[in-house]
Amino acid sequence: MQEAKADGLSKCVSEIRDLYLSDFNPLEYHLTFYSTLDDEVKFFLDNYHDAFQKDNLLTSLSPNKRRVLDFGCGPVPVYAATAAYFTNSITMAEIVPANRKAIESWMSSEGDAIDWSQFFNHIASLDDETRTGDEYATKLRDAFQLVVPCDGGLPNPLHPVCQTYDVVMSTLCLEFATTSLDDYRSMLANVSSLIKPGGVLMMAGALGNTSYQVGQCTYPSVTLTKEDITDVFNSLETLQLVALRTLDRQTSLEKPANHKGIFFLMAQKTKK
Image (cartoon, rainbow, N blue to C red; front, top):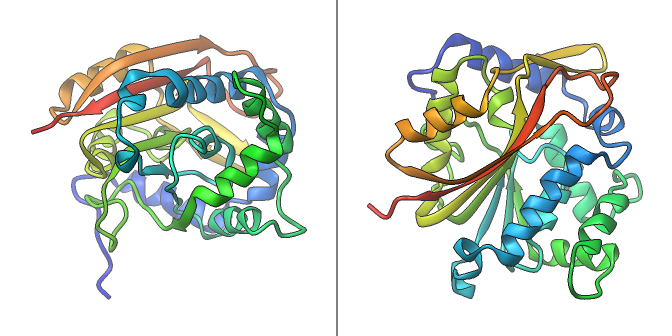
């Protein structure tokens, strides 16, 4: 099989990709950033949950047009869980093999899988109906299809698979795959190719960040502002930005990331 190549992206993208592939540790990542349920993660979960439960862009989709892709999911199953009662089909995509293994371990309920129960309990607490965190976990496992390799630097980020989805969600992903707005724009265009016409993109991420640390390894990022995000979406003919919410940094400065805030957005794929 011939290896797919990234088009029009800087060398930095491949260098960051290699850094993740060689060094990223999902257990250390969980310990560093998800050992507690902080207000920033709540912001992400709350916005995803409300969108899947209440936003007309999503609730108006017919039941057979609700296939969801969680792009760049890392070792984290909880963001996809917000879609568990929205769809019966959730695919997860991740570039790092160790993260894919962590997802599969959790989905299979293996004894050494990372414990995400406090996050599932929070999602359940947002419901109007009486559901438990365990019920959300079970529903996610029922809706889960598979976890596949991905690379946002490729024109088809799921190469060699050719598939599109009604909803694509992506959390703390693209801004950490590059250090330039041009590359960020190109990667966003690549990811948008995975969305069906009329479908929805939801993204949550960091503002004003330059790097974060897991263990002894430092991972760079593009430094985004709210205005940058708006400009990038305005430059793309394939996506219409329909909502952009931000929150100033809430977490302790001891957390090894230097972001100044976070964002959540929704965009719709044009029907052309």
